[in-house]
Amino acid sequence: LEWIEKVALAIEILAVVIIVAAIFYSMARYSIQAIFQPASRLADRYGQLKISLGRSLLLGLEILVAADIIKTVALETTVQSVVVLGLLVVIRIFLGWSLIVELEGRWPWQPKTKSDDA
Image (cartoon, rainbow, N blue to C red; front, side, top):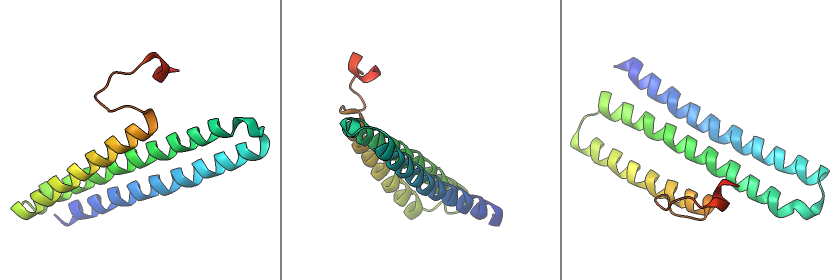
């Protein structure tokens, strides 16, 4: 069971690395575009930055939840750990929905419009 704990820790570290790397990448890309592209496209660049950061956060959250599931199922199958896992999943769902609303301007269960595909 010790190796499962190490695997879960490695997955958590991977999630943090993905989030941090995506933040640096997105900010560097935004900065380079701000320097070399006309100021008239500022709103487009900001929108792209928001989308890039939001997607990386969603991916990181998904990976963190996967690590928590591994730890709960394989290591700590107590009522308390399952309740904590359930709360984490609920919080992750709320954060995911919030990010989707922020990025796409619609709730996850609402159908995409033609303008969403553009």
